[in-house]
Each structure stands twice: as structure tokens, then as C-alpha cells.
Image (cartoon, rainbow, N blue to C red; front, side, top):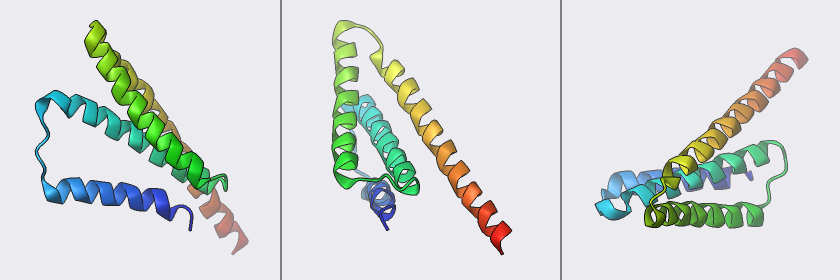
Length: 119
């Protein structure tokens, strides 16, 4: 049941952006994409925590907000000082998303294998 919250949030966000077709000003497009990646990192971490029976809604929500804001602020700071922190944040967050997804897949495949052995 707890897994429904992060998955539903991701789906609602995706469909809202996809169907509303809102224009994004070019000046904030990179910040928005980085914030979306940080949000995806939080959602994948929330799903992983749910599978491991460690999910807590307050930790998920605070982590989602802090990660998203921090990623945007780091990209802005990098633009101001002339250092491409955006790319570093994308690499770090992208790595975490793929790590979480691989652990989610491993957990699900392990549960499937165990259920097959029991039947």
C-alpha cells in the first residue's frame, strides 16, 4: 500500500506535464530538468524503501523537497560562478536512480523466485 504514494505521485506528475503541454521558459529549463531528475531519485528511493519495508512518508516528502531544491540551487550556483555543477548533479543523481532501480529489480526478482520455489 505504501508503494502506491511515490508511484502515484510520479504518474500524476508525468501525465500533468505531458497532457497540459505547458511551455517552459528556456532560462529555467535546465533547472527544471535537474529538479525533475532529483524528484525521480527521491521517488525511486521511496519505492526501494517501500519494498524493503522501511518507507516513512515524512522522510520521503522532506527528502523529495530538499533534494529537488538543492539540485536546483546547485545548478544556479554553478551558473553564477561559471562552473558546470549541473553536469555533476546529473551524473550523481542519475547514478543513484539507476542504483535504486537495479535494487528494486533485484528485490522483485528475488520475491518472484521465492514464490515459484514455494509453489
